[in-house]
Amino acid sequence: MAIPVRIGTRKSIMALAQTEDIARRLSAAASELDVEIVKFETVGDSDQVSKLLPHGGKGGAFVAEIRAAVTAGKLEACMHSLKDMPGNEDTPGLIIGATLSRDPPTDALVLRKGLTLEDLRKSRGKGYTIGTNAVRRAAYAKRLFPEVNVIHFRGAADTRVRKLDNAEKQRLPDGGHVGPADALIMARSGLERVGFVDRIVHDFTPQEMLPSAGQGIVAVECAVNNWQIRKYLELIDDPVARLSCDAEREVLWVLNGHCNSPMAAFSTIKGSEMTLSASVLDEEGGLFIEASRSGPANRPRELGRAVALELLDKGAAAIIERTRPE
Image 1 (spheres, rainbow, N blue to C red):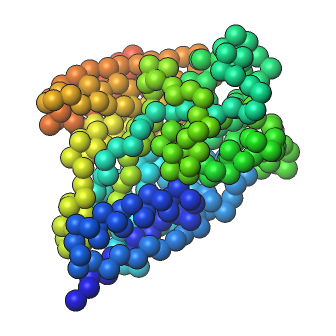
Image 2: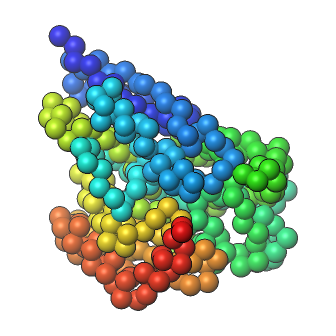
Image 3: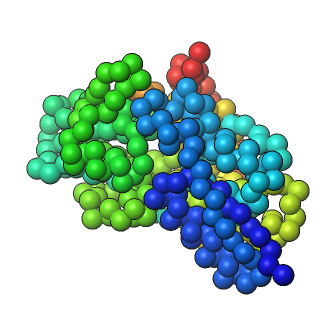
């Protein structure tokens, strides 16, 4: 008898591609599963104008509705980009049942026709506009190109590239507009999944732009007491991605950051050792605090806590509080 597994996901091209990957892996690992993809249009997808903060940040905008369906028993599991999952709060009744092997975690630069990376570098960004909906990317962009204009730029990955190519302005909640953008900063993994890898003109190294915690990792969430589904999800769990997930999210937990905090955390594993780097910036990129440590890879949360505490010792809490919504 087939065992139904309903997986919830957003409707975007990228989200569907990620969820289809989960479905393929589950079906290959356990032929008795009848996997169904259930599409949701979250408030973050239907409202392409507002900033995410009024919707509760990425967690409220892209995660809350689908999580509620799992809690209510309407879904067995749901898919999230790990970087979109709030890291400073508990989610009673839910657990990450699987983390897929990590896609490229770095950020990438996409330019309009006629503009080059050298143009941006020589001008320090003066006279140009970069679009992003991530405060972390905005802060790093100001460090790399100090005189650039950074604007709030929403939309699915493919939609943002289309808006760039068509020189479309971004509507604002008050009815005004900003833009158009000359460049975009986006996750490389997202551009790959929507077929726009050829538009990447530069991959930012982690030294240039430290990735967001969990960037490039797809997470599958399920009910904590659904032991049958948890057993099946374990079959597709990648142990290396899981270690990185635990280390990087521990940084978010200890710092108690919020969706408007320019924060980053990224880990690498070589053999039995993990190296974890994390940073906290102000929104203009002027204040910058970073910490990096290495330790046993099989104790990721301890390493994450140590790095986060070092950031707090260096003054990270004051930066986070200044950017916290009132």
